[in-house]
Image (cartoon, rainbow, N blue to C red; front, side, top):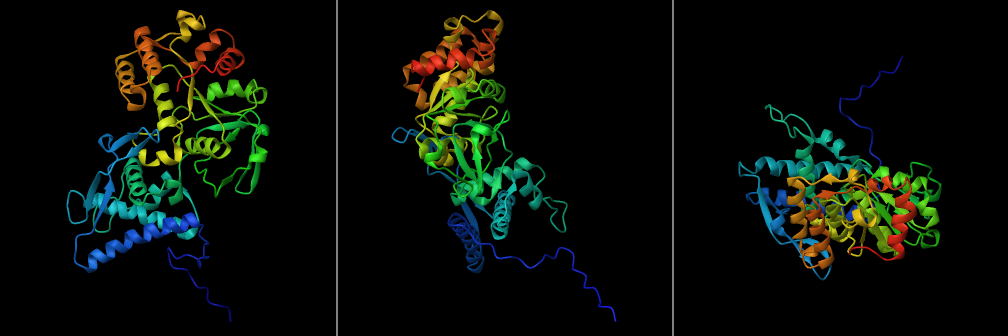
Length: 387
């Protein structure tokens, strides 16, 4: 007699293999379980469940002159379940936390987009969705990060890879040996998660003397093709403009664990100044991460406002400032970490007086390899940078 087939119920899963948590995972799991336990305790005590989320606003961010980084203040926003104006955000907070716990339970990671689809559904008996747009989910993820004092990588979340590196260093990535001197024209794609559980450094396998970070992939390609990293014994990185958190975390670890100086080659415009500010002091919006990412000793190597005359550039490379540029430049000048630095004030005022900005690519008007063979080597030799 043929055996009757057993049909698995829809949504049923195979027996789960018990996942061994790392020490960091255990800490994160305890925070997530503690959050859920507080909800249960409030319900059992007939109290209104709530969470106090540190405020991620400019007014709650302060600059620490001693640490030379941005830090969050003590301001918090209370989010309550039984307040109609806050109930949706409260429930979304718990939903994101539960999704992250599922990832830890299964020992898996997912993208920010992946978590959005994991959690997106229509609430039964209504036409209301948990999330309609990804930015709604991303905002709650950041809330959960500050609420639990955990970066998103500890919640097993990652973003799209943006940025690359090449140079005189060999390290281990999930058990695979990566020799950054043999990465070809594309380089090593810097992952979103660069934590010690994923990437391990060995000082004996790093021959580099410094890190050169350039703003854009197009400029990085010129440095790589000219093998600048080989001639000057360094690590060459880029972050596709505003560097994502994975790139910033990689730079932080290279600088602090391997004691490598960091020099930044960025555009001469308010955006280039801001990128340097984020690398050096941290992000205003994500100040809670500064202690893991900010590099106060980073140096701004260029492009500078004086370079139009110093490098004898032609008028054709000028890009006129607009009202947004002028406004942004004045905002950057008022940042506490730039406000009392004469060199930075002169730099910004010179750009405003010029009434134009310059991209690093403008140096190509001198020669295709001017930036790699003349500009950067001279700035390094003369120690001509802004701090």
